[in-house]
Length: 176
Image (cartoon, rainbow, N blue to C red; front, side):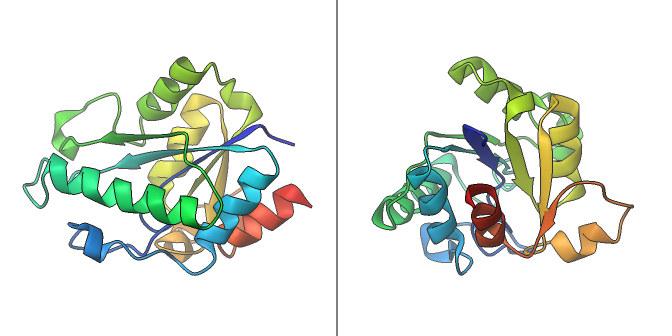
């Protein structure tokens, strides 16, 4: 069994929005996602988050608002019995060509460096092609969930990644 799982945020843990999640009030967990994180943690699997947050560069939310969203996420996860080790995010605009914006592997590599993770031994769970490409570039096993943009992503290319209806289905499969 893997010792860690890295999760995308929007569309995997919480409901996504075309206009960005701009405040803690707009952060709404997908049913079963908090239970999934708790299940993984109770099986000694460390949880990390790697998420693009271009809404910062686009002026849709401030870094303080993003911090408030992440505080709520961590609080809700802890209330459900789970734990988030770290949240790495890319605040850059897609045109900035930074190394951290998925599909580039920078966020995953930063987590690997900070926590001595062997990315080939873990999973990156996402709902978009960017997530799957970042996992592939980083040498991590990509997992597609069909929440958020997952259904659309499944039709973009033939997928060889494991695919699950949601994060809870993945967690149950991994821990069974």
